Image (cartoon, rainbow over all chains, first blue to last red; front, side):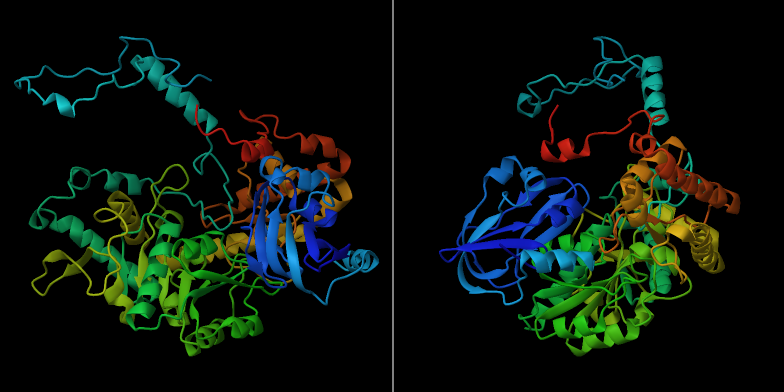
Length: 118
Length: 474
């Protein structure tokens, strides 16, 4: 699992990237009440805003750490957006068939150190 | 408490009509409703008690301090209600002949002229019904201006991330693509980011000045130059106009389109007491794009309604919310040029005094603010678990309306205060003491703060459940 500065996690297996937000991000957001999912088939660029998360406090964008085509979205979150709060690392948001990966992703250790600077 | 429908009993009534001397008129049955109207049937005293009880559960600026940042919940002088209730204004019909409503048209014309002077713009439309409606109208004008010149590539609108949430919403509704640029720590525009975002596809920039952190962006003329050099137009979100009335003018700063919130800056009722009014002002070269109809005055002194040559069309039926316009015009006449300036100066002084009293918790400790400022409860939250929300809720128990929370987004655990010009020094001191007391209690008895308010009619609604499972029908 790798991490972006904008607090997304990404797991790449067999050229498919699974993307979610980190536990730090869900904690900052507060109770998530709505996930505005992207359309399957959409072509996204690295760091492009793919969807918006809505919490009781604010609306925040989620960027794609990879370039490629969105092939699946987590429809379970439609009914249960609170899963992002309770289990951020299992509540994935969308999957992308990867054409290119961001060169600026961090390891878990690097991400933890990055959080200390915030 | 029960709703007025739950109080209903067949046959009870709170009205009495005089005897009817007209002959009954037989309507064609196709015009008649097939179902009985479901109206509550309530006797007069029950009706009066019902609404009196409701009003006791409500809270407004007439009850106490209401420092909702970026919303300018200012006191609405009662004289505004007197003028707006004059029968000459209330007994009008929008389809009346223009020669019979010259006085009302004159009022609108004079209000247009006054707002032009206050904002430094070349022309003004009073039609939009609210601030966001004004934004939408202004963006329509910007869009049409570009397309009429055959410049079809200008599809992007730049909005700083410290902007009011309505800015991105209005842009999207108007079919423009949003480009978000980061703000500097004091909420001002990052000039490098702006330059990088500007190009041949830029329709314009939307900006609030002073910004949502209550800071006047000193780079405004540079910002204006960058956007204009790229061929874009500048849009002024007038929500924070209360800081600069009679002192600075968006037109002089280089803005091409401006909206005002009469229900904020010009003391007409706001938030449930509405409706609002969001006049839009434009520079000379955009005057022909204003909504139709537009009030004009000819050489003989006759007022009429005209259709500007390149108009974007009507954005509201008829002339906008006319009675709101009467109230705003009254406010302007009562205060006059000096009074308006004085109101803004007092608003800024009050905000700075309250900011000073609370400086320990200030997001931006060292410098002065305009008409509003932002506290950050981040430290309190980390140390006690008590959030900005809890502190805001606790203020309700002290008879104070909470400030704006969690806005602007760039400040963690934000509480944004706008005391407005009419609060006394004593009120500000009392409020500061209460806020400090609540924060102190967060350290000594955090659970108590987290469980507040206790004294309010409604204590803590489940906001998460309300958002996740909205129940929109009874």
